[in-house]
Image (cartoon, rainbow, N blue to C red; front, side, top):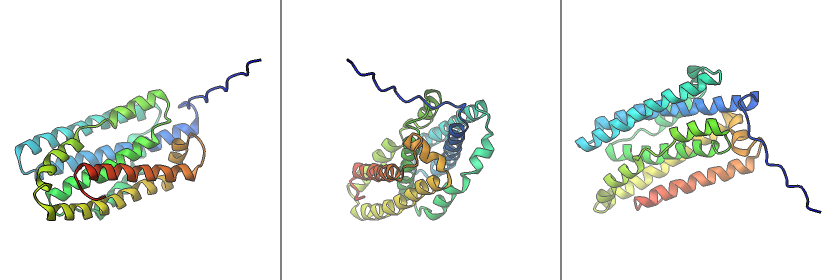
Length: 230
Protein backbone atom coordinates (compact mmCIF):
# COMPACT_ATOMS: atom_id res chain seq x y z
CA UNK A 1 0.00 0.00 0.00
CA UNK A 2 1.44 3.33 -1.06
CA UNK A 3 1.72 5.88 1.74
CA UNK A 4 0.21 9.30 1.18
CA UNK A 5 2.63 12.05 0.28
CA UNK A 6 3.31 14.65 2.92
CA UNK A 7 1.33 17.74 1.97
CA UNK A 8 3.42 20.76 1.05
CA UNK A 9 3.30 23.57 3.58
CA UNK A 10 0.79 26.23 2.61
CA UNK A 11 2.15 29.56 1.44
CA UNK A 12 1.65 32.48 3.80
CA UNK A 13 -1.04 34.95 2.84
CA UNK A 14 -1.39 38.64 3.49
CA UNK A 15 -4.70 37.91 5.28
CA UNK A 16 -2.69 36.47 8.18
CA UNK A 17 -2.12 39.46 10.55
CA UNK A 18 1.25 38.14 11.77
CA UNK A 19 2.51 37.61 8.23
CA UNK A 20 1.15 40.96 7.08
CA UNK A 21 2.97 42.69 9.94
CA UNK A 22 6.21 40.93 9.05
CA UNK A 23 5.87 41.94 5.41
CA UNK A 24 5.30 45.56 6.37
CA UNK A 25 8.37 45.47 8.63
CA UNK A 26 10.44 44.14 5.74
CA UNK A 27 9.03 46.65 3.28
CA UNK A 28 9.80 49.46 5.71
CA UNK A 29 13.45 48.41 5.88
CA UNK A 30 13.52 47.94 2.12
CA UNK A 31 11.99 51.37 1.48
CA UNK A 32 14.35 53.17 3.80
CA UNK A 33 17.23 51.31 2.20
CA UNK A 34 16.13 52.55 -1.22
CA UNK A 35 15.91 56.12 0.05
CA UNK A 36 19.36 55.83 1.60
CA UNK A 37 20.71 54.30 -1.61
CA UNK A 38 19.35 57.19 -3.65
CA UNK A 39 21.00 59.74 -1.38
CA UNK A 40 24.26 57.80 -1.26
CA UNK A 41 24.53 57.20 -5.01
CA UNK A 42 23.58 60.79 -5.82
CA UNK A 43 26.23 61.97 -3.36
CA UNK A 44 28.81 59.58 -4.80
CA UNK A 45 28.08 60.94 -8.27
CA UNK A 46 29.18 64.38 -7.07
CA UNK A 47 32.54 62.94 -6.01
CA UNK A 48 33.10 60.83 -9.13
CA UNK A 49 36.34 61.94 -10.80
CA UNK A 50 35.08 61.57 -14.36
CA UNK A 51 31.93 61.97 -16.44
CA UNK A 52 31.46 58.22 -16.82
CA UNK A 53 31.19 57.78 -13.07
CA UNK A 54 28.90 60.77 -12.69
CA UNK A 55 26.48 59.48 -15.34
CA UNK A 56 26.54 55.87 -14.14
CA UNK A 57 25.91 56.69 -10.49
CA UNK A 58 23.26 59.32 -11.28
CA UNK A 59 21.31 56.77 -13.34
CA UNK A 60 21.57 54.22 -10.54
CA UNK A 61 20.29 56.82 -8.07
CA UNK A 62 17.30 57.48 -10.29
CA UNK A 63 16.51 53.76 -10.31
CA UNK A 64 16.37 53.69 -6.51
CA UNK A 65 13.59 56.31 -6.52
CA UNK A 66 11.63 54.21 -9.02
CA UNK A 67 11.94 51.25 -6.65
CA UNK A 68 10.66 53.39 -3.80
CA UNK A 69 7.50 54.14 -5.78
CA UNK A 70 6.95 50.42 -6.39
CA UNK A 71 7.33 49.63 -2.68
CA UNK A 72 4.88 52.39 -1.75
CA UNK A 73 2.28 50.95 -4.12
CA UNK A 74 2.61 47.53 -2.46
CA UNK A 75 2.52 48.94 1.07
CA UNK A 76 -0.65 50.88 0.24
CA UNK A 77 -2.25 47.85 -1.41
CA UNK A 78 -1.87 45.76 1.74
CA UNK A 79 -3.17 48.52 3.99
CA UNK A 80 0.02 50.10 5.32
CA UNK A 81 1.47 53.61 5.36
CA UNK A 82 4.87 54.07 3.77
CA UNK A 83 6.18 56.75 6.12
CA UNK A 84 5.04 54.83 9.18
CA UNK A 85 6.75 51.57 8.19
CA UNK A 86 9.91 53.41 7.14
CA UNK A 87 10.11 55.36 10.39
CA UNK A 88 10.48 52.14 12.40
CA UNK A 89 13.82 51.44 10.69
CA UNK A 90 15.12 54.90 9.84
CA UNK A 91 17.82 55.03 12.47
CA UNK A 92 19.36 51.62 11.75
CA UNK A 93 21.00 52.66 8.49
CA UNK A 94 21.48 56.17 9.80
CA UNK A 95 23.68 54.82 12.59
CA UNK A 96 25.60 52.74 10.07
CA UNK A 97 26.33 55.80 7.93
CA UNK A 98 27.36 57.85 10.95
CA UNK A 99 29.91 55.19 12.00
CA UNK A 100 31.38 54.68 8.52
CA UNK A 101 32.18 58.09 7.09
CA UNK A 102 34.52 57.64 4.10
CA UNK A 103 37.59 59.84 3.76
CA UNK A 104 37.89 59.79 -0.03
CA UNK A 105 36.42 58.52 -3.30
CA UNK A 106 37.97 55.07 -2.93
CA UNK A 107 36.53 54.54 0.53
CA UNK A 108 33.14 55.73 -0.72
CA UNK A 109 33.22 53.01 -3.37
CA UNK A 110 34.20 50.29 -0.90
CA UNK A 111 31.60 51.38 1.64
CA UNK A 112 28.75 51.01 -0.84
CA UNK A 113 30.18 47.89 -2.47
CA UNK A 114 30.80 46.09 0.83
CA UNK A 115 28.39 47.65 3.32
CA UNK A 116 25.28 48.13 1.28
CA UNK A 117 26.03 44.97 -0.67
CA UNK A 118 25.74 43.05 2.60
CA UNK A 119 22.53 44.89 3.52
CA UNK A 120 21.04 43.87 0.17
CA UNK A 121 22.08 40.26 0.80
CA UNK A 122 20.36 40.42 4.19
CA UNK A 123 17.14 41.63 2.59
CA UNK A 124 17.32 38.83 0.02
CA UNK A 125 17.80 36.24 2.77
CA UNK A 126 14.76 37.44 4.70
CA UNK A 127 12.66 37.52 1.51
CA UNK A 128 13.09 33.88 0.49
CA UNK A 129 9.83 32.62 2.03
CA UNK A 130 7.54 35.48 1.00
CA UNK A 131 4.33 34.69 -0.86
CA UNK A 132 4.72 34.82 -4.66
CA UNK A 133 3.05 38.22 -5.18
CA UNK A 134 5.12 40.06 -2.58
CA UNK A 135 8.26 38.12 -3.50
CA UNK A 136 7.97 39.24 -7.14
CA UNK A 137 7.99 42.90 -6.09
CA UNK A 138 10.83 42.47 -3.62
CA UNK A 139 12.95 40.51 -6.11
CA UNK A 140 12.51 43.29 -8.66
CA UNK A 141 13.56 45.93 -6.13
CA UNK A 142 16.59 43.92 -5.02
CA UNK A 143 17.75 43.01 -8.53
CA UNK A 144 21.39 43.69 -9.34
CA UNK A 145 21.81 47.26 -10.60
CA UNK A 146 25.36 46.75 -11.85
CA UNK A 147 27.05 48.66 -9.03
CA UNK A 148 29.41 45.83 -8.09
CA UNK A 149 30.63 45.48 -11.67
CA UNK A 150 31.12 49.26 -11.83
CA UNK A 151 33.25 49.25 -8.67
CA UNK A 152 35.37 46.35 -9.88
CA UNK A 153 35.96 48.02 -13.25
CA UNK A 154 37.06 51.25 -11.54
CA UNK A 155 39.12 49.82 -8.69
CA UNK A 156 40.74 46.73 -10.21
CA UNK A 157 43.28 48.56 -12.43
CA UNK A 158 44.11 51.03 -9.65
CA UNK A 159 44.67 48.34 -7.02
CA UNK A 160 46.88 46.40 -9.43
CA UNK A 161 49.48 49.17 -9.24
CA UNK A 162 48.92 50.66 -5.78
CA UNK A 163 49.49 48.10 -3.05
CA UNK A 164 49.38 50.73 -0.33
CA UNK A 165 45.86 51.73 -1.36
CA UNK A 166 44.90 48.06 -1.44
CA UNK A 167 46.04 47.55 2.14
CA UNK A 168 44.14 50.63 3.30
CA UNK A 169 40.94 49.60 1.53
CA UNK A 170 41.17 46.04 2.84
CA UNK A 171 41.30 47.41 6.39
CA UNK A 172 38.44 49.80 5.62
CA UNK A 173 36.38 46.97 4.15
CA UNK A 174 36.77 44.93 7.33
CA UNK A 175 35.57 47.86 9.40
CA UNK A 176 32.60 48.48 7.13
CA UNK A 177 31.49 44.84 7.04
CA UNK A 178 31.55 44.68 10.83
CA UNK A 179 29.19 47.63 10.99
CA UNK A 180 27.00 46.19 8.22
CA UNK A 181 26.65 42.88 10.06
CA UNK A 182 25.57 44.90 13.08
CA UNK A 183 22.83 46.43 10.90
CA UNK A 184 21.51 42.94 10.12
CA UNK A 185 21.66 41.84 13.76
CA UNK A 186 19.96 45.04 14.96
CA UNK A 187 17.19 44.63 12.40
CA UNK A 188 16.48 41.10 13.63
CA UNK A 189 16.42 42.22 17.26
CA UNK A 190 14.15 45.20 16.66
CA UNK A 191 11.90 43.34 14.26
CA UNK A 192 11.45 39.75 15.52
CA UNK A 193 8.92 39.25 12.73
CA UNK A 194 11.86 39.16 10.30
CA UNK A 195 13.19 36.06 12.07
CA UNK A 196 9.82 34.41 11.47
CA UNK A 197 10.05 35.33 7.78
CA UNK A 198 13.58 33.97 7.62
CA UNK A 199 12.72 30.66 9.29
CA UNK A 200 9.23 30.15 7.90
CA UNK A 201 7.40 30.77 11.16
CA UNK A 202 9.78 29.40 13.78
CA UNK A 203 11.91 31.36 16.21
CA UNK A 204 15.12 29.66 15.19
CA UNK A 205 18.29 31.37 16.41
CA UNK A 206 20.41 28.71 14.72
CA UNK A 207 19.02 29.64 11.31
CA UNK A 208 19.65 33.32 12.02
CA UNK A 209 23.27 32.53 12.89
CA UNK A 210 23.66 30.54 9.68
CA UNK A 211 22.29 33.48 7.75
CA UNK A 212 24.84 35.85 9.31
CA UNK A 213 27.59 33.39 8.35
CA UNK A 214 26.33 33.40 4.76
CA UNK A 215 26.42 37.19 4.76
CA UNK A 216 30.05 37.09 5.91
CA UNK A 217 30.80 34.65 3.12
CA UNK A 218 29.27 37.00 0.57
CA UNK A 219 31.52 39.77 1.87
CA UNK A 220 34.60 37.58 1.43
CA UNK A 221 33.64 36.90 -2.19
CA UNK A 222 33.21 40.61 -2.89
CA UNK A 223 36.62 41.43 -1.47
CA UNK A 224 38.15 38.54 -3.41
CA UNK A 225 36.88 40.04 -6.66
CA UNK A 226 39.07 43.05 -5.90
CA UNK A 227 42.02 40.97 -4.74
CA UNK A 228 41.62 42.31 -1.19
CA UNK A 229 41.83 40.31 2.03
CA UNK A 230 38.46 40.08 3.78
